[in-house]
Length: 113
Image 1 (tube, rainbow, N blue to C red):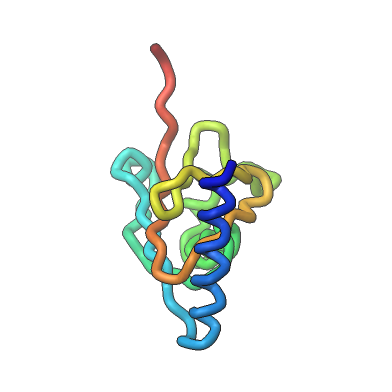
Image 2: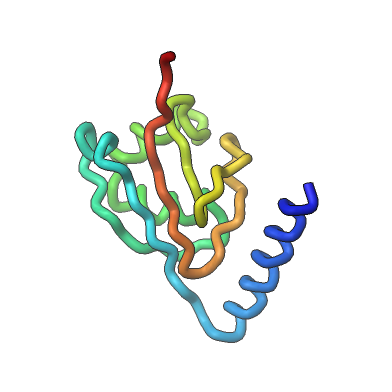
């Protein structure tokens, strides 16, 4: 819990610094497994949350939206999103913070045993 609070504190300080420095873009990468089904080249997008960043990406790629998000706009069960190496916690609202210049990875979840 303390590590999560420390991470949130660092994110907040990053946002405050970004306010003074101007906008920075997050880098979004879709894994090869996803790209076998729908073209999603690496791109950059602006936004403070996973939802804002993905909305920018999907505005130009609606096929990717349908593959990654369900009809209610939540992350599909077979998908995972990582921001800065940490898996997001809000799969429904996608409200997890995306600091400036973060790396966002979108991938398929592995299943089976």
